[in-house]
Length: 407
Image: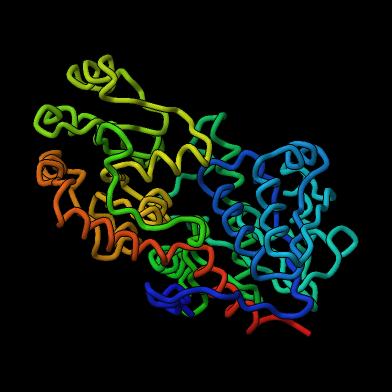
């Protein structure tokens, strides 16, 4: 069942979110404090949605990280959202084992009701077997990247400092295979992810559901046609040079034609300066290229919203949150021709190839940020971005969980 398409149209307004009596959920929240990227950030975003859908949300965390969570901006924001809603409970359960102990708990069947009670739903991502099977509870396993791949390396072929990662991957794979044979809800973050899981595990795609991640409440912002008040025009690139992401490609391609564009570049993430070409370093020294290793969530949203366009370059993603975040803010998106990124942006993005730097430069040279065509591009980006609102995601999660809640 793919719920990413079972969503309101762009222009639908939201007056309420579906609620069901006594609906509660436990969320594995060990990595939520200081969540910045990847699965921890996805868990945080899903938890915001759960505060809208469920009457009670219980954050499961270890005693060691309890104080970190209580003092985090993430926890305060979740509390504020419950306060705004005016109903429901946000609870804290610090009986979660630390990660190293949780591997052993999975081996003996998972956490039982003495630690987590009997909620209607139990959410996890990195530990598929963390909960002991209970007849009154439904497990939700959030799927980002397959726990196995056809080309994965074996334990004997990796150095000692990498063996822990291989063992963790193999354990996740083992426990996930068990989930394939029970009645857990397997919820992928994209149709592309669903297809990968089905292929890697040799099961039918209808075993999986799809609900896209959401990035914010649409009611908090409004569409802006004019960005002239944001100062000197700039492009933004949100990603570090790691794994499959490639901001260096973007920076060097932009730098070679920067004098033609009269557009600065802002990069949010870690970038190895020794990989930048000479002209890029010169632009950096002149502050026409600005690189921030980290920005707070509010500062990042402000920086994204003020950009002329957002550029994203990756050789492999489960979803592509920076693309969704930019569209949500009504910022036009430019990304490479990766299938999952095209799933996120629909037909509103400009595409380039990571095999051809000139293809990105051609797109950048076409940018015209002051005419009516650009305003139209911003508007259709804004409309596409409504699909990544917490309101939309709440509707999808409410529809799915209402069908599987056990009495």
